[in-house]
Structures are given as C-alpha cells and as structure tokens.
Amino acid sequence: MSSALEDPRIIEFDVRTDEMLVNMGPQHPSTHGVLRLVLRTDGEVVSEVTPHIGYLHRCAEKIGENLTPRQWIPYTDRMDYLAGMNMNLGWALTVEKLLNYDLPEKARHLRVIIAEMNRIASHLVGMGAYGLDLGTFSPFLYAFREREKILNLFEDVCGARLTYSYLTVGGATADLPRGWVQKCEQFLDELMPCIDEFHTLLTENAIFIKRTAGIGVLSPEMAIDYGCTGPVLRGSGVDQDLRRDGEAIYTGMYEGYAFEVIVQKNGHYPQDHQYPPVPPEAVVGDCWHRFYVRMLEVVQSVDLVRQAIDKYTTATGDWGTPVKLTEKLPKGEVYLETEAPRGQMGFYLVSDGSSIPWRARARSSCFCNLSVCPEICKGVLIADVPAIVGSLDIVMGEIDR
Amino acid sequence: MPSGADFVEQLKKKFPGKITGANLDAIDPWIEVAADGIVDVCRHLRDDPKLRFDMLNCVSAVDYFEPDAKKAAKVAWQPHIEVVYHLWSVPNKNSLVLKVILPRWKDDRPGEIPEVPSVSGIWSTADWHEREVYDLCGVRFTGHPNLRRILCPEDWVGHPLRKDYEMPLEYHGIRGR
Image (cartoon, rainbow over all chains, first blue to last red; front, side, top):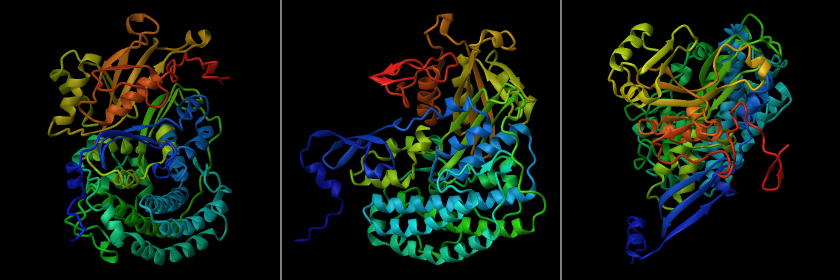
C-alpha cells in the first residue's frame, strides 16, 4: 500500500482532535528575533495566528525627539541592523528633503554603490536564514561566506561591520578608501558564480519547492490592503519599486541607471532566462516567488553597483560634506519613503525650527509585512508557519524600533 | 497630490463642512479633515476610480504641547494633537497627506484621551498602525476591532510619545531612572 497522501490535511479532519494553543517564540530560532506567535491549532492545522511584538522596543522615536538628525543616524542603524546603510540613507534623504539640500554628483553615485551593496548583503542573509527556517543548514553557510566579504568591504569604508552610520545628512562621512573600488569589483566577479550555487542549493531543490511553492499565497489586493512593500509586494506581482516610482529626491539618485523592476510580467521575470525557471506548482504570491524576487534582486543590485562604480570613478564634485551636527532645521514637515531591502522604509520628520526635530517617526516596512501574517497563515500546517514567516524576511529590530 | 487647489475645492463640495483646511504650500501639502468625516473622505479617496489611494503608508500622531512654560509662551499654536495619514496610490504612483486635528484631552478632562473614528475598515494597514498610535501617543480609534497596546506591555501606564509623559520610577521591580 502506498503511504503517499494526496493532501495531508484531509486525514487531519478525519481524526478527532482538540483545539490547542501553541506558543511559538519569543525565542524560537525561526521567528527571526524575538517574535512571539500564538497559534490556535487543531491537530496539525493552524486556524489562527496572533503575533505579539514589542520585545525589542527601544523607544527610537522618543530618542529622535531629543537628538539632532545627525545624532539620530546611529539609531537608524539599529532599527534594521541587516541593512544599516539603507536606513541611514532613508533618514539622511528625509532631512535633506527638508533642508532642500542638493547633493554633489559623486556623493550620489557613492550612495548607490553603498546602498546596493548592503541590499546584496541583506538579501543573502534573508536567503540563508530562510534555508535555516526550512531545515537546511548549508545555504546559510554559503550565504554568510559571501556576506562576510561585503562586511569586510564595509569595514574598510567606515570601520564598522554592522552598524555603519556611514551615509549621513549631506553625503557620507568619508570618501571611499583608495583601491576600494577595485576590491569591490573583484568581489562582484566572485559573487556571480556563487549565485548559481545558491540557485542549485535552494531554488531548484525539490524539497525546497515542495515546502514553499503554493504555500502562503498573498493576493496582490491583500498585499496592497495590508501595506506590504518590497519583495513581498513584488512577489505578489504588483509592479512597484520606489527606485523607479518614488519621490524625485530619491529617484534622482538612480537617474541614468538602467534597471528593470523585478516583478513577474506575462509569466516571466526579467533575467529569469539565466536562472532556474518557475516551477509549475508555484503560484504568484507564494513563498517561492517572494524568495525568487529576492534572489533576482541580488543580481539586479550587482548590476547597479557595476554601473555606479563606472559613474563614480568619472564623476565630478565632492563625495559630500556632512552638515553641521547641530544644523538648524527649517520649520516644516516632510515624509519620505525609500526602497530598503525589506520594503518601503518611511521617515516622517516634523520640525519647529530648532535643530532638534519636534517629531521623528519611522514607518517600518516589516511592521506592515508582518501584519499580513495572520491572514495568510489561516488553515496552513504548523510546519508551514515558519516557511511563511521566513518568506516575509522580517527583522524584529525594525518592527519594534 | 492630484492638482492642488482644484482638488481641495472638489473635496469641499463633496463633503461640506468636513474639510477644515489645507496647506498647499508645504513641502508635502496636506488637507485637514474633521474627525467625524475622516472615514467617508478616506473611503472616497480609495474608491474613486481616478484617485485610487489604495495604500495607506503610515498613520502617525504628533503631540503639540510645550511642557516648558517659558517656551510655551512663545509658540504660535494652541496645544493639540494631529493624527497624520500618509496615503499612496499604487496605480497612479502619487501620495496624499491627510490630517485630523484633535484636542489633547477629550472634553479638556486630563486623562481622557481624544477619539477619532478608525479607518481600519478601509485599509487593513491601519489596524496595527492605529494600535501603535494609541499605544504611544494616546489617541482612541473608535470602531477599531482590537485596540490594544502593541509595542508597550499591556499594563503600561501612560503614552510615551506625549510631550508631558513622565518616565515611571519603577516597573515590576525594574528601576526606571
């Protein structure tokens, strides 16, 4: 007799089981930090998920009301600690929008290099940790080997490996060191063959496809309704990337760059001919697509860094002069969203005319991405919950702030 | 924002008495909406086939209160709280800012937090964001399905982002300051 079941859920409904509350976290390894999920289960089937957050709340917004914008830069690092550069950039651009600051061309390209390098590092962690969630350890080690090289490069740039505070209001805190650009190019050349390895390890892996394809399907309407952004939104087939669609001050940074938004159009992703095809069981908006969008964005970022290096080496002007630490802010209020690796990171700054903001608000992308989790976890198996939460690629530091 | 002053006029005609003001010269222009009209205005903004503000990016509250009496004499505004809604249209790729001005305390009774109708029935994003605003800034969203604290512990006292908030001296045996 064959032991294979068409759908394991069918048998679950035949066996009489009691409803049970299961606590997952706050220290569960697959919850990406201190996230507590309360699962209401019936046998193996989850009927309700309630996330409890706030374990990592560090009052960042209250601190922002007591420091000048440049002093708050290190705190933005600590929100999304896997993409510190992108967080610095988001806040710096928000303040520059209020100051009406015109950035020199060289600083613009420098920022693109740094921000896209950090996006690669962040997506590598996202990919490696997702493997861990699904019970495979090796992709994690492969991903961290490559990420380590990026951290080494960042260490050369600013001395820090995780919390950089490198990009700041008015440019960067220093120019790129001599010879760094060559090292960076060499790294990109080394990274490209590794991406094929990652695809062999996970994307094409039959077990991986079984665990992710068709699981946790998020419809585009629901993604928009819940304010999901970044790879989660694009994985659902919504064509939006703030690097192309955002406000002028942010898209101006990417002016003159050639890139295509990674979203499935007519059943195809840009550049998917180089990589494993979409498996037939995958549905747009499922865990597999969210993962695949991240993987393709790594390649996109590699391409963007290459373009940025070309432009940076020939650009005129300065790498930027940071504004005074206690620079007086004009009266007014601004809101700006940027495309961080995990989604649209927004900052809202209200100034009363002094050098300290009246209100500094951070709109977290993971906060919205996680809020959709109870909706897409309804009726899945317990083992699928880590697969779904992992595919959202959350960082608790950013959710709790 | 879709074509400035005309747009505000249209809204004023459609919702008489509910649009209480606008600032179109600001860097991010905003429209002020009366608290009792926010749900209708938001539903219109989301459902209108031309506007289609289908994404709510952010809900935040700003407390306008100066605890220092010397500085308070110099400020131009009366103490109040602003609830700010940042909307975004995915098909049109444009943004809009709405504001609701509330008193700091309901009926001027300190301790009674002000109320505004919840928009969580229009955008699900508002669910968690309004919980956060309630938790940190002390604004009650009437009609919210589950208005509990989200970042602070459930037994926390006070709303930390209020300007007159005092850090507790002690919380379950942990020294506060």
